[in-house]
Length: 408
Ligand code: CTP
Image (cartoon, rainbow, N blue to C red; front, side, top):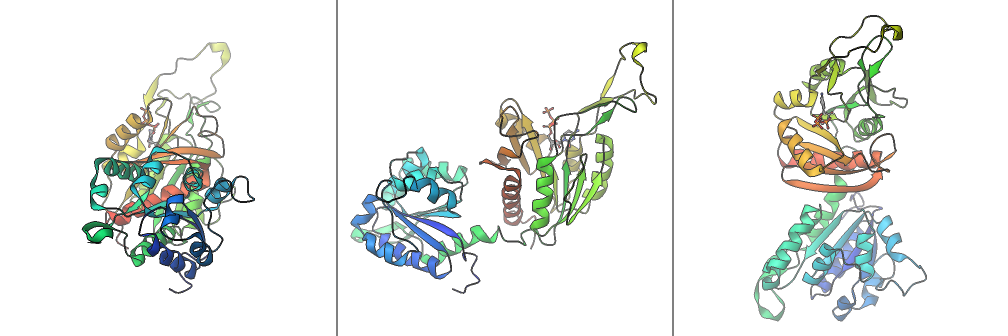
């Protein structure tokens, strides 16, 4: 494996479960270290019955750990979990899968899993009957729903001479899957793609000085535009708020929903991806006064009329190869609302958040979102808006590739 592997410089926690396939995992660890990764072996007690700790310590990038309590570091799990770029569980036994799926944290490996936001690859290996047991099937489905990558066991000769599905996947296959995790985070993920992003709350005029507005700061939309530009896309940002650092981004300022509709519907025709992060007002004044409304004339009657729904329009006119990302800022049931918007507006993704949370949503620099697409639902965890944007874009690119929407 050459030094150009995407594993170069990546920190990987190799979580070893207690199964006979542990002997093959030594080779997997060595391959990842050879490829340039920094591999921290974290073993379960049961794994030591198959391969000794010294072997993992000698071939890993640092000594193998087993317990929360056996080192000088008082909280090794948070350090390991936070620093990790990926966690690979191999062999993932039925017991390890069950503890991870249930959120049990009773040893160093399972506490590390809970203390991490890094992607996790589960490489399952066990006897055929165990792999097919309904509890294992359900636990694996739970992990997949949460965005965990599961590498299924292969068919072959198993311990004890049985033949069937259960063998740990080939080392080459596992290394490839782990490399793919990082390939999608590389710089050129959106190269040659044209991306349109909207940001900020629209302002719907009442008269020349007053408007109906909302609390959107535009931060999440701007973070999307920046992340897309850094991933190599040509980016148009249609924004109601000023954008100070617009390097590599074409900013088009707009104010009202109608102005945004006009610009977006025009530019979207040639875009591969549209990210509708703007908080578009649903209603506007139907009788905008051309002059300032005077207080002495009494409270004005403002009749409201609906604005055009930009995302729904894009959904109705979507061309093949175009991917649409909408948002749902909610105070009620996220899933019901997000799924309704996904369907009604013919979007490919809905990024949903609860605006009542203090450290997420309007005006703050962090967010906590759940991504809805197809039948999937992925909670992206609490993070800064730039990080959220990049994660969503990774899912979008992966989806576009897998569904054939984007050919290259
Ligand atoms: N949106 C839009 N045009 C509108 C209103 C909303 O393009 N006139 C887009 C938003 O940019 C967002 C998505 O639609 O990506 C969902 O917006 P939201 O305001 O949450 O949904 P609504 O359609 O207004 O539904 P509801 O009022 O029921 O929440």
